Figure 1 (cartoon, helix red, strand yellow):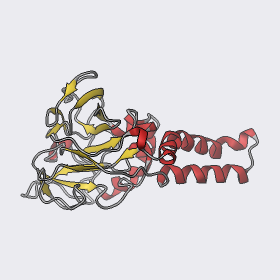
Figure 2 (cartoon, rainbow, N blue to C red; figure 1 turned 120 degrees about the vertical axis):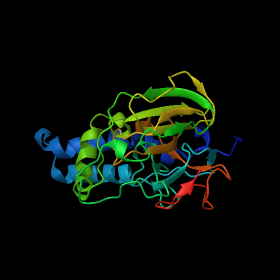
Figure 3 (cartoon, rainbow, N blue to C red; figure 1 turned 90 degrees about the horizontal axis):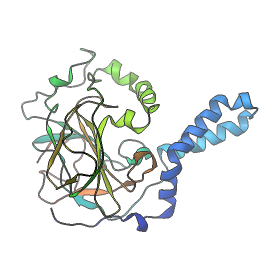
Figure 4 (cartoon, rainbow, N blue to C red; figure 1 turned 90 degrees about the vertical axis):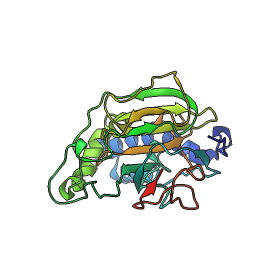
Length: 276
């Protein structure tokens, strides 16, 4: 894998990085102040503005820009991006947890065997999706900082009723912190001020441990349905901090020729199948 342009932590603009560090704690403070501040005597005209500013920072404010780092796709075969930075930034609708440029990938075989969103059944077993258990690969050389694979793989949320309930479910999962959202995941230190995060992995599939050195293209886990995911998928993002709750997302692109078709920006567009 060729070395690439990247955004070293030290060279990133100060304001987006500062916002990234305080984003999640500020949101918690704003929420608690709004909900419980009245018991402490805080007036509503003070509580509501604080919450509104915290919400704006949590959802939209603070974006690290720069030349993207080149990495390898973390999957093989025919896949589709549910959301990604080729279509919008923040790609997941929020800058929180370093996910500004995050990419969510699901297996999309040409035979159409991936179940689509429908009213019924309300949920499906993860094994009914072609991506469940598919190998996940290291996107670059690095050292594993964190490897978590104890969370169960839940049933899908691909019916309309479940999708409508996902907001409440995600809020409850967030009470556990980033792990509640990410599920089973691996964090890799790429050695240049950037950290790769791969999430929603299958329980018991992680092949690496903290402190282990990995090479680009090395199989490290399998696609699962753990955490805040609607179906078996692989979530990938680059961050400027090893802990997602303090991280700013960093831009990336896939190596030229690594996937087809691939837009000019180097990452796949949502709902457009690509082959690795």
